[in-house]
Length: 111
Length: 113
Image (spheres, one colour):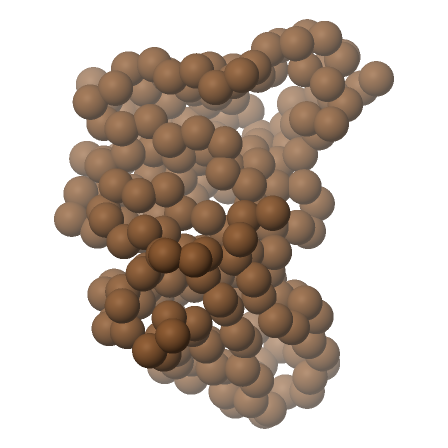
């Protein structure tokens, strides 16, 4: 079954603004990962947050995880035109390492 | 560059044919995963191999098969191709543990005409 439902699915912002995306999932997880995909290209791993972590930072990225609500958010601060891409959350379920991807958020950063 | 390589980048073939997609994992990674990305189904996990053995199976059709060789590269075989098999096929690799980050290759775009 599909885990990970990002919300909103499309976001258009001005350069310099912050972008926030949410992801919810249904079952217990090992970890949750966020990936970026530029149009038709490979997925780039952004950040991994484990089920026992609540918040993680990497450069301009901030990820939170709320296991009680089964949700995560990805915040991109001070967005740049190069951040224009699709962003996917993916959950790794307990007992295996296969990733279940959400439908993705399309983010457009307008220069 | 993730360190995962996939060949070919593009593949155009006809219905009923068979193709083989190849993946070389990052140096030192023992696990290889295959995913399919299509407009209607999104990103779907197909199959995982760990050190040559099948570890997990997802939404992989019976017409599809995969294997991981002793040098750890992997091949995904797609046979009796249908129009609906047109998609991007990604390979990913990880060190092997259940909490490892997966690193994705650039993908193979398969077009079935």
